[in-house]
Image (tube, rainbow, N blue to C red):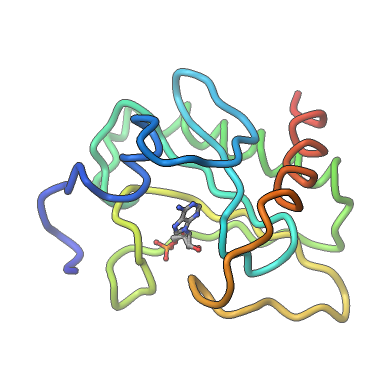
Length: 145
Ligand code: AMP
Protein backbone atom coordinates (compact mmCIF):
# COMPACT_ATOMS: atom_id res chain seq x y z
CA UNK A 1 0.00 0.00 0.00
CA UNK A 2 1.37 3.38 -0.93
CA UNK A 3 1.54 6.43 1.26
CA UNK A 4 -1.15 8.15 -0.77
CA UNK A 5 -4.26 6.17 -1.74
CA UNK A 6 -8.01 6.41 -1.28
CA UNK A 7 -9.30 5.52 2.18
CA UNK A 8 -10.55 1.91 2.26
CA UNK A 9 -13.65 1.86 4.46
CA UNK A 10 -13.25 -1.92 4.84
CA UNK A 11 -10.00 -1.63 6.81
CA UNK A 12 -10.01 -3.46 10.16
CA UNK A 13 -10.19 -0.33 12.30
CA UNK A 14 -13.09 1.11 10.27
CA UNK A 15 -14.91 -2.18 10.93
CA UNK A 16 -14.11 -1.90 14.64
CA UNK A 17 -15.46 1.67 14.66
CA UNK A 18 -18.70 0.47 13.00
CA UNK A 19 -19.02 -2.31 15.57
CA UNK A 20 -18.54 -5.03 12.93
CA UNK A 21 -15.47 -6.47 14.69
CA UNK A 22 -14.88 -6.82 18.44
CA UNK A 23 -12.28 -4.91 20.39
CA UNK A 24 -11.13 -4.60 23.99
CA UNK A 25 -11.95 -0.95 24.60
CA UNK A 26 -9.92 1.17 26.97
CA UNK A 27 -11.45 4.59 26.26
CA UNK A 28 -14.02 6.04 23.88
CA UNK A 29 -15.57 9.44 23.25
CA UNK A 30 -16.73 11.35 20.17
CA UNK A 31 -13.12 12.04 19.08
CA UNK A 32 -11.25 8.75 19.52
CA UNK A 33 -11.42 5.09 20.40
CA UNK A 34 -8.60 3.41 22.33
CA UNK A 35 -8.32 -0.37 22.50
CA UNK A 36 -5.85 -3.15 23.20
CA UNK A 37 -3.64 -4.34 20.33
CA UNK A 38 -4.45 -8.03 19.84
CA UNK A 39 -0.86 -8.75 18.75
CA UNK A 40 0.82 -6.83 21.58
CA UNK A 41 4.51 -6.02 21.24
CA UNK A 42 4.63 -5.43 24.99
CA UNK A 43 2.13 -6.03 27.77
CA UNK A 44 -0.32 -3.11 27.72
CA UNK A 45 0.17 -2.25 24.03
CA UNK A 46 -2.72 0.11 23.29
CA UNK A 47 -3.92 1.77 20.07
CA UNK A 48 -5.71 5.13 19.77
CA UNK A 49 -7.67 5.82 16.58
CA UNK A 50 -9.60 8.93 15.52
CA UNK A 51 -13.36 8.73 14.96
CA UNK A 52 -15.44 10.45 12.31
CA UNK A 53 -12.60 10.99 9.86
CA UNK A 54 -11.27 9.04 6.86
CA UNK A 55 -7.54 9.48 7.52
CA UNK A 56 -5.26 6.65 6.41
CA UNK A 57 -2.29 8.13 8.19
CA UNK A 58 -0.91 11.14 10.03
CA UNK A 59 -0.41 13.11 6.81
CA UNK A 60 -4.09 12.69 5.87
CA UNK A 61 -5.48 13.91 9.18
CA UNK A 62 -7.25 17.28 8.84
CA UNK A 63 -5.08 19.67 10.90
CA UNK A 64 -8.12 21.09 12.68
CA UNK A 65 -8.91 17.61 14.04
CA UNK A 66 -5.39 16.86 15.17
CA UNK A 67 -5.36 18.74 18.46
CA UNK A 68 -8.38 16.97 19.96
CA UNK A 69 -7.11 13.60 18.75
CA UNK A 70 -3.59 14.08 20.14
CA UNK A 71 -5.12 15.14 23.45
CA UNK A 72 -6.78 11.69 23.56
CA UNK A 73 -3.50 9.97 22.68
CA UNK A 74 -1.87 11.73 25.63
CA UNK A 75 -4.84 10.98 27.90
CA UNK A 76 -4.53 7.25 27.19
CA UNK A 77 -0.72 7.29 27.48
CA UNK A 78 -1.05 8.92 30.90
CA UNK A 79 -3.61 6.29 31.94
CA UNK A 80 -1.27 3.51 30.77
CA UNK A 81 1.50 5.05 32.88
CA UNK A 82 -0.71 5.33 35.97
CA UNK A 83 -2.19 1.83 35.52
CA UNK A 84 0.93 -0.16 34.67
CA UNK A 85 3.85 1.94 36.02
CA UNK A 86 6.22 1.03 33.18
CA UNK A 87 9.84 2.22 33.12
CA UNK A 88 9.15 4.00 29.83
CA UNK A 89 6.53 4.40 27.12
CA UNK A 90 6.97 4.40 23.35
CA UNK A 91 4.35 6.45 21.48
CA UNK A 92 4.71 5.70 17.79
CA UNK A 93 2.95 5.78 14.46
CA UNK A 94 3.76 4.50 10.92
CA UNK A 95 2.86 6.01 7.55
CA UNK A 96 2.83 3.70 4.51
CA UNK A 97 3.60 0.00 4.19
CA UNK A 98 7.32 0.58 3.70
CA UNK A 99 7.35 2.43 7.02
CA UNK A 100 5.71 -0.52 8.77
CA UNK A 101 2.02 0.40 8.54
CA UNK A 102 -0.29 -2.60 8.19
CA UNK A 103 -3.72 -1.09 8.96
CA UNK A 104 -4.65 1.97 6.94
CA UNK A 105 -6.67 4.02 9.41
CA UNK A 106 -4.59 6.49 11.43
CA UNK A 107 -3.51 5.14 14.82
CA UNK A 108 -0.92 5.80 17.47
CA UNK A 109 0.67 2.92 19.34
CA UNK A 110 1.25 3.25 23.09
CA UNK A 111 3.85 0.69 24.17
CA UNK A 112 4.80 0.37 27.83
CA UNK A 113 8.47 -0.61 28.15
CA UNK A 114 10.18 -2.22 31.11
CA UNK A 115 13.84 -2.77 31.90
CA UNK A 116 15.03 -6.21 30.78
CA UNK A 117 11.90 -7.03 28.75
CA UNK A 118 12.32 -6.77 25.00
CA UNK A 119 9.69 -5.54 22.59
CA UNK A 120 8.19 -8.22 20.31
CA UNK A 121 8.08 -7.88 16.52
CA UNK A 122 5.51 -5.50 15.07
CA UNK A 123 2.10 -6.84 13.92
CA UNK A 124 3.07 -10.49 14.13
CA UNK A 125 3.09 -13.51 16.39
CA UNK A 126 0.29 -15.09 18.35
CA UNK A 127 -2.96 -13.36 19.13
CA UNK A 128 -3.11 -12.39 22.81
CA UNK A 129 -5.40 -14.08 25.30
CA UNK A 130 -8.51 -11.86 25.33
CA UNK A 131 -9.18 -12.41 29.04
CA UNK A 132 -5.66 -11.17 29.76
CA UNK A 133 -6.20 -8.11 27.54
CA UNK A 134 -9.49 -7.43 29.37
CA UNK A 135 -7.67 -7.54 32.70
CA UNK A 136 -5.03 -5.04 31.53
CA UNK A 137 -7.66 -2.85 29.85
CA UNK A 138 -9.63 -2.73 33.07
CA UNK A 139 -6.64 -1.29 34.92
CA UNK A 140 -6.11 1.32 32.20
CA UNK A 141 -9.83 2.24 32.13
CA UNK A 142 -9.77 2.91 35.85
CA UNK A 143 -6.76 5.21 35.41
CA UNK A 144 -8.35 7.44 32.74
CA UNK A 145 -8.72 11.04 33.88
P1 AMP B 1 0.38 -0.70 12.05
O1 AMP B 1 1.18 -1.85 11.55
O2 AMP B 1 1.18 0.45 12.57
O3 AMP B 1 -0.62 -0.29 10.99
O4 AMP B 1 -0.41 -1.21 13.32
C1 AMP B 1 -1.54 -1.99 13.24
C2 AMP B 1 -1.66 -2.65 14.57
O5 AMP B 1 -2.96 -3.20 14.65
C3 AMP B 1 -0.69 -3.81 14.78
O6 AMP B 1 0.09 -3.56 15.95
C4 AMP B 1 -1.58 -5.03 14.92
O7 AMP B 1 -1.10 -5.92 15.88
C5 AMP B 1 -2.89 -4.41 15.35
N1 AMP B 1 -4.10 -5.14 15.00
C6 AMP B 1 -4.39 -5.78 13.85
N2 AMP B 1 -5.65 -6.26 13.89
C7 AMP B 1 -6.18 -5.90 15.08
C8 AMP B 1 -7.43 -6.08 15.72
N3 AMP B 1 -8.43 -6.75 15.14
N4 AMP B 1 -7.61 -5.57 16.97
C9 AMP B 1 -6.60 -4.91 17.59
N5 AMP B 1 -5.40 -4.69 17.04
C10 AMP B 1 -5.18 -5.17 15.80
